[in-house]
Length: 243
Image 1 (cartoon, rainbow, N blue to C red):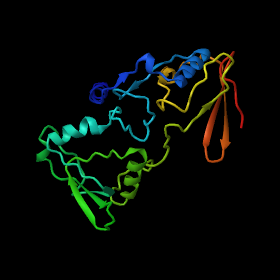
Image 2: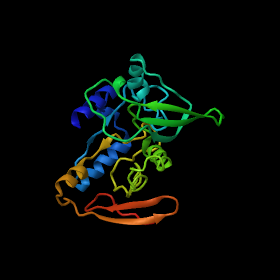
Image 3: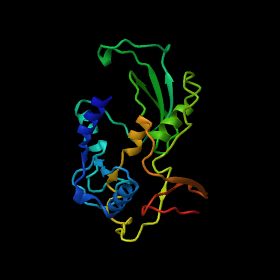
Image 4: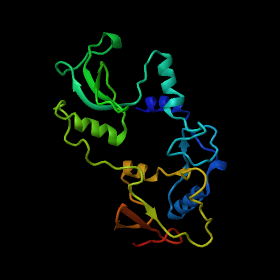
């Protein structure tokens, strides 16, 4: 899959950010990781001309965040695609008997294989259907699972694992007390991401090598917050916090 990821990153203009763009929170994160004996490096973002406004999650009002509106969708429209908006997909149903479709031919020569039933988000209760030769579901973690679960009666070959074992970005939180002498990380200004990332745990999971630092982890249950992982470090790194 690496060539396809590289192609997508090229389209989205993903680049490693400059050191000058790392906010204070990223500096604190990198110092803590260093104290714990872990590697850390500047993150790669799909961002061009960031002004540090902090609108990263809700949508950049300055057009710096390289969303699909700035690359893939304009190219698709230029190639003849039609983008329908104000629609909510309600169900997916197969057309005809399921089976493999031979590859190598033109998409226009393929038979219609799916019917997507939608409802317009304009107050009307009327349904509209779209036939598709090739169907790609890209409604996000929750939206895709919800659509497939709504279509379970129409798609009997679906896995019973759909909608299960879902983990979200931010499901696990790490908390700690900063040692004396550390910079005060400003968490309320600038970009919403610290700009630093570590692939240490991903690499270790692949190699199954033991951790280099002796960290203890505890879990506490806080109302409305889900599971929170608390990390304790050796030496002068992050100290444990209890709820």
